[in-house]
Amino acid sequence: MDDKLNKGLLQNEGEGSKTADKNYREAATGFAKKTDTLKKGLEAERDVEMYKDDFDSAEKAGRSHSAGDLPNDLSGNFDDKK
Image (cartoon, rainbow, N blue to C red; front, top):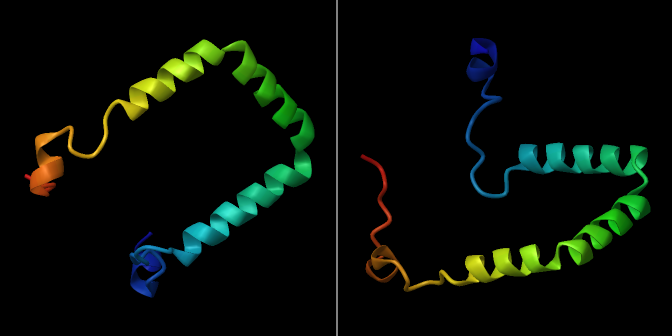
């Protein structure tokens, strides 16, 4: 681990991390190559239709909180570090 730190391999790349992008693309490609993606898509569609009320309820709960709902949304004070 220290060797990686010394070589700079674990440095923060900031937004748009090339390493994270590369890892994601490799994993997504591997998944697509070894999985019947059409079948998985049809299964997901069936699950959404079967549990439509649950999905709608979750979406409604997520949308119920928008910018301006919390005091810090308006003040811009997002410093959670203590």
